[in-house]
Structures are given as structure tokens and as C-alpha cells.
Figure 1 (cartoon, one colour):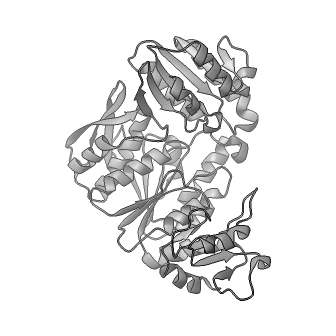
Figure 2 (cartoon, helix red, strand yellow):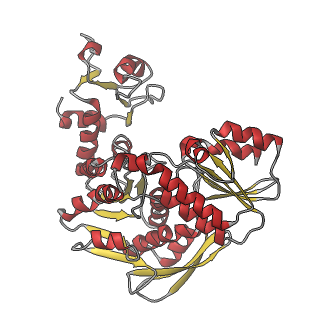
Length: 431
């Protein structure tokens, strides 16, 4: 079936789904495949559950007399092509966002600011890959003024694939750092992959970048572009500074009108300053009133174990356990060291997907801890446990849970940071 014909089915539907357990009436089911499942086997169930059509790519699952099945050569590619076709039909202005750290928080801050003036669609959660991006785009409606689309990557070419689907008009790279080195091969590989967003926009008419002028890597990568700068120094379009960080980030920002605005956020960590400043910059560029920008930044509350502050009956927790890489881990530790609090301790989990650099990068974290003099340090994971140090370590989080049950912590301010797969979130009920 041609994409134009499938698009007509889409327009007459209630949307798309890739989960046969979540089939709302009159939706299109796309039978995606994974390492351990074949969506084609669930097509019949999806139709029985209310889906109007099932898009499959194996003829063996095509009944002879049921026109509710749409046979294509590749379901995933068809989903991506449909999303791109839909994006082109609507012509909605799209901001593409990527980066090593902070892209989800920045995306949500940008959406919060822009929503003060516009109808905004933005990536939900971390649906930022080759499946999540098309699913986001297929939620676009005529009523949306602008979309903020997050793009993640773990291998070279990932961002190129996503920008070819989304075709953004504006781009922002939050930063470039050491993450997924196992997939990228090197820091230079990270830069090249994140830079695929810039590469796409370089050839697009009337494109625009939002760039942190304090980041030398991004400044070099963005040469020759139409750029709106933000940062602490010089004369960028929007400039600002950190005014407080105990425990919540407070900042001051000003645009070219030289009017200063002070904001008390609900974000933990001065590393979130550039994320908030990026949102203020984009809001200013799109004409959101400064007072509305302030309200949006102040009202935003982080979720899903990202820079969250939680006070329990026994301790104060700083939860940043959704993901971790050498750049974000060091930023969290440096911020925590500066924070004014008593009885500071850290619970750190291994940083995953670092390949041959894993031992070296974990050793750097241990060396930093040696000079930080936190009251208590608990380390979790195979890599931390294998390295020489004087801290108590646990190969698995379940071992840590037994320790916390037998010797409960009280009266502490605790930074919890590690890759999501280490499952440090399991400790929260014991803290």
C-alpha cells in the first residue's frame, strides 16, 4: 500500500498503537518486531481488541478474506514514513533537541515555557528513539503551533535517522559529553553523532540553532549557522547566572532589553542552569512574555528520578538515578559538594555502556570521592566493586537493600546517582 493511501486510513482513525494490549477503538496497529517478540503474531488480537487495521510485514499472517490487514515490506520503516508524511502535510514548526545530558529536562522546560503562549506537542517521557519519534509526530494535530521533539542516540547515525523523519526547523544540542562510549567508540564519535542534527539543519532553508555560547565544542560545531546564543558571558541573546543552589537552583536572566528576571526553580543542581536558560532563550525568541517565562520555570517540577528532592521521615534525598555517565556523574558530585547541607552521603551506581573506558572513568569518580570527604559513600555495581578503594561496595542493589534494612540511615542528606539499570530507585522506600 502506498503511504498516501495508508495516510488516509490514518486520518480516519483514532491514532496508532504498537501494543496489542492498548488498542483503543478505531486505532491502527503497527506490528513491530523486537529481539524477543514478533508483532505480526499479535495482529489478530489487536483487531479483536478494537483496532480498525493491522499493519504487518509477514505474508504468513495475512488472511485471505480480511481487508483489515495491511501488508507492507517493513512495518518499522512504514511507521517512520507515515510519520514523516504526516509531518510534511501539517508543516508544524519543529524544534529538534539532543545532547549527552539534560535533553529531557530541557525539552520539558522548553515545552512548559512555550505552552504559556502556544499549543505545544512535545515528546512524552523518553520516547526519543527510532520508534518514539515517529509515534510523537503522529500525535501532531492542526491545533498544534509548535512541536519539541527529543532525539536520543547510542550509535553513529542514530540522530541522522531521526532528523530525516522529523525534519526539524530549529535545533538545540544541550551539550556533548562521555556517554554510550561503547556504541560511539570515542568522545569524538559522540560529537559527530550529536552533530548530525546540525548537519541536517545546515542544508535546510531558514533553519536556526540555539547554542550555549559558553560551550567551546558547540561553538566550534555551529560555525556558519544562523545562531541564537545564550550563556553566562559576553553579549548573547539571553544571558544569565546562578544566584542560589541550596538546595534548589535559583537564577537570574536577561534578554536584550536588559531587564533582569529572578527565578526560584524546583530543580536540584546548578548543572540545570543552562537547561533553564535555554528554555528562557527559546521562549523569548518565540515571543513569550518574560513574566510568563518566569512562571513556567518556577512551576516546573522534575519527575521520574531526575534531579528530584524528596524529604522522607528520616532523610533528605537528592534523586538523580534515571541515568548516569561520566559527565553527569561528575556534575552531580560537584554540585552536591557545594550544596549547604549536613551529614552528606552518596549512593552511586555503575555507569553503563562505557566500553573500554569504563575502568578509567569509574576510577576518576573514586579519585574525586577521595578528595570530597563525604560522610558516607556506598557504591553499587560490578565495576565499582572491582576497583581498589576504601568505600563499602555492593555488586548488586539487593545487597545494598539488605545493608539498609539492617542498618537504617537517619538524618542524612543523600545523593543517589547511577545508571537506571542498576535500579537504585529500589532503595527509596528504605531511605
